[in-house]
Image (cartoon, rainbow, N blue to C red; front, side, top):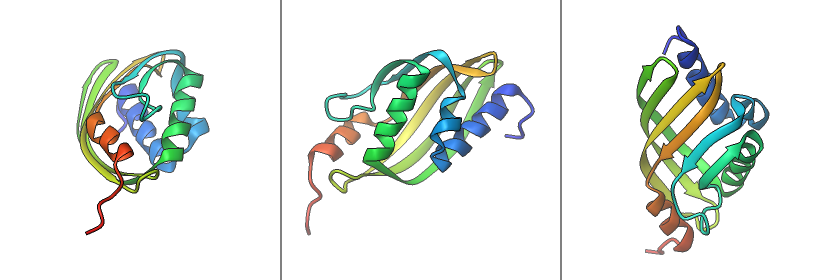
Amino acid sequence: MTGDSPMQSLIQRFFQLLAQRDLNNLSELFADEVDWHIPGNEAVAPWLGRRKSRQEVRDCYQLLWQNTEPLSATVDKVFIDQEDAVISGEFSTKMLQTGQIVNSLFFIQIGIKDNLIVTYKLLEDSYAVSVALTESPKND
């Protein structure tokens, strides 16, 4: 990504702020009203689910960061069609509650309007996240 389009620039900034865990600036990338969805078991992983506002997105990241430790992440492909993008990649995250590690592919759909994120949908192995949060690590 070279930052040639508003979407490319926004995606680049999004991942930079996410890696830095810069909650204030990251949340400012989102519109006041947003269509956010990360499917999964919200009772086990409360950062999953639907969000509708910038503040709810902010709260989501706070929950995620209080409960996980990122180990690695790779963006494989970014597909852009004007104000919509799909991003694919892989990540590895440690669940702090249990010490379990989750390795997953991910796909993110982002839509922007007026250079702010209005749609954010993340598909990951949320089943693996739920299992990792409910099982203790096995001692060999």
